[in-house]
Length: 320
Image (cartoon, rainbow, N blue to C red; front, side):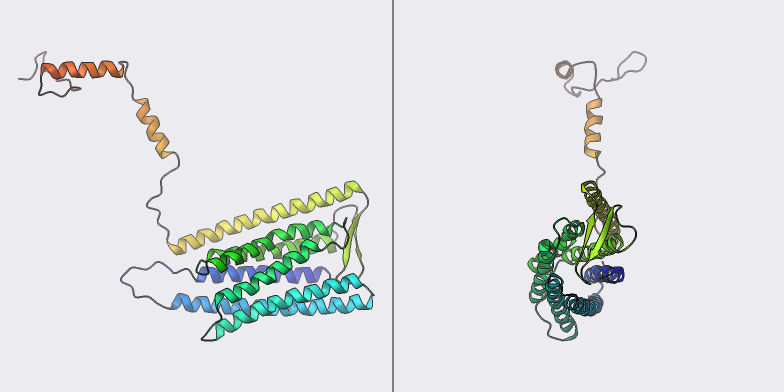
């Protein structure tokens, strides 16, 4: 497939995930005074963002289908049956995503859109098939590329769960935001796979063996080289997750600011504990029982005085 294919696919997935996150944030209404009449601007922004997202994913699906057909032709020329079977599966997955994008595109253009449950169901089938493709792909049981495919299952699973949540609650914006994050992580990991497999930055002691354009494996010299290459892949994925966490925190802050959250009930951490410590820190040398008995005694002397009060006098004489 080549580094250029991975780079284009990764960049396109990052852009698609960003568009999905933007489309989800466009559905959040901006806070306005009660006297302001409702406007249709958020709906217009939402439809425009959805149209751009589905148009881009349609073009991306067509590119995947075209790439799989080229790889299928190369596998047939090289007499690679495994590569031919893999490219047929890739073409089927891309066709499902094309159906999902085309359905969403029609829903954005027509006055009577398709039900959101139907659109999300097609997307769920597409993401599930993609998950099963990478989960069951074992061209070479000891190939380092299998470690990269296993780690790729994490962002795909995020997309599957987000789509399920959107089917359950189509009005919520957070499933779309989660799917956008999953797509961005997929794109980043595709870029990392291209760099780690098709460049000189491959793990030391490993090399790539390519049978056809879409059928390749990464072999290493010995057992220690395999372990080091797998550990490097895991470390790279953890770095990508840390980057995604930083991006999500930034996006979440922007979304919360747009929603206009209620911070009047905010309480500093440990405020209740601090009050308890201050109340417990006020103590006297007398015990509680002695204080109660003294208060009762003073109350018996002068009924008008409170039990715990002490009346002060001037020059040794009390007030009369």
